[in-house]
Image (tube, rainbow, N blue to C red; front, top):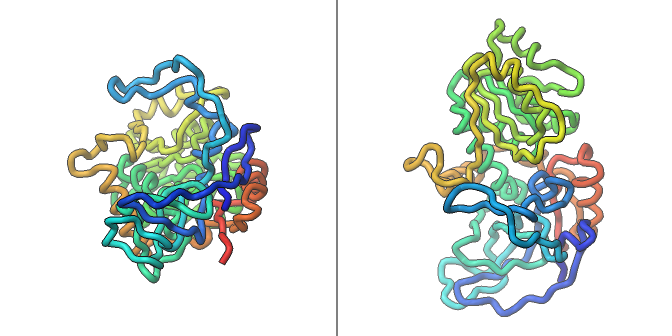
Length: 345
């Protein structure tokens, strides 16, 4: 059996492992499918952004580590798995052998997880819908933090899995116009196929000006920025209406390029929200929590409210997923949307 790890050389590698006995309260799942999380996993080119600092939960500030973390080649690559339960630990009575479930974990042949942490999939649910569960959580967080309302005009900036799910969520929330922006043509086509109204290439079009011309000089009411790119932030602010809401969903790394916040950002009194769905308490606490966002995302996917078939593309075989990861996540992201992995039948 093998699993995909970030090797000591900073590149994905398949390494052998052995399973231990299933503990009490746990189940073992044999993987059928899986998917990595491109942006978060490869942010900073595979370098750990927390190697020198850590977040102090008690004071809500980043502090320097006494000792820098070193990559020992044991970090898993991959975000979610879909498979069948092949073994039940002692005391597990609410699940059955052969049951199809999804959960969190890196790309590997088997997963041994607490029974309460697996998600039971209905018969009509596809594996591609299941692996879009994580991106939908953060998409919903951005939609809520941006206060998208019926009739609003919305711009989704960045069309990875989170942005593509956010575009569909904005439509479900009643947006009258959903515009999207991404330099990758393949992703723009998927967004349009899934219901977006208009798509822009930010490297070729001044879509802030175009959107103002389309909206009688007003601009969009809400921007959901999912790419974590500073130039995309600048462009999104340019498209945002006076007094509009900007939800910063994408994780911003260290700023190494000039960004001008002194034009539209300063003049147009926009409301800026750093949107991180898993930070507690939620902005709508106590009514909403991350747990409620997760439950809502799963229920909506189970009900078939989102198109995911063309989001999880391409799909590679597990035996070659190290090469696939290099090809579609690291070297040529323009050829992929969200890479899926198929294990042996």
